[in-house]
Length: 277
Image (cartoon, rainbow, N blue to C red; front, side, top):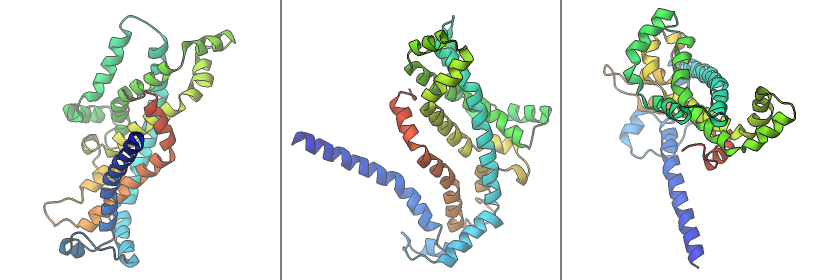
């Protein structure tokens, strides 16, 4: 009886946490289907949906406000940065996990500590550097700083996954004639696939939501990310269109949400394997 009561209580807590997490997204989606006057006149909004209003709101957001273009820019930047970070971080994490040298642990902690540095601390030097090397107001001007910011966390996550794999597997592969690179490519990477997905998701979420670096590096509308584009809706010169702002929120959330749904089984395996310490 005690076990059943405990299990029922655990399920109740999980359901409440799930509702608390999904409720803001559902409320945001409902607001995105209304007129501005309806949002101001009735709280909470009704569930009376009209397709013409939904189409008008999202047409305004995606095309008139340019959020479709900003979303594409964010996808390009996030995709390129994530791939490059994994290419750099995976061999580095494997080296930290498998090779012992003086200062190994201290260096690993130093790399992780760089992740805690707030972007505002280096925003102005970063702006000047991007201008000096000629990458200001370009995709490359965003990708390079994002690689630097994402690399420490991804390295640390991947170290945890490589540590979970016994050293004997490496030794057996080397005895079979594999080089270190072949051990990493043919043996280790398939085994740490959940770690790659987990690390890429954490890095992608940070880059997708990042605002300050993009604000300093990007000037033209052509390269604005979705975070910058969403910020332009809030202005002191005119009232906020809450229905349009809600539609922007939905457009912002949906790509990351879809990606998370597709890779959720890897995320669960990654978290239970001790990837995040």
